[in-house]
Image 1 (cartoon, rainbow, N blue to C red):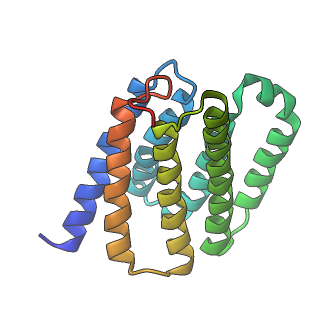
Image 2: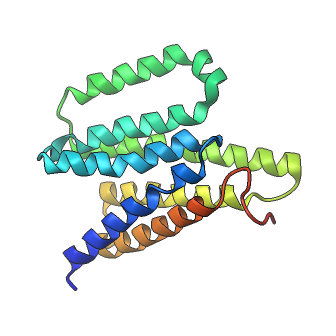
Length: 191
């Protein structure tokens, strides 16, 4: 089996696995987050099939923005609606220019760091209020680290791209399977 064939198998396995978590997370606090994750790769695949590779970073910027919006909750959406609309307009404005891919990846990494800290805050709040460690949020934090590292590697090339892609893709498939089985409100065993 060649490396491109392995890439395709991992890519399509990941797409299939990540379609399941939104079904499992339905009516949960993180449903919209998992739904956006589930549709992001298929949208990217469709755009690539139309030879629109050059807008992929822009699409990922938009998807990263939607991931943050999905985590804010109704009260914060109302409270910060002007800021969110301003950020969306800034993304659209910036997208109209052709920047180096490093600009887009830096933006995506920053948004994913912000998402990581949202999950970290929730993890800490749950630990302080319930005095137990949420395994679900540990998996979310580890998943976010793989996302950040994957984009950071694309930006800085700090590791062998092929091996790093294989490792992070396999880890993300495992995380997708976990989120397909466990919910935030029914996370499995607590420590």
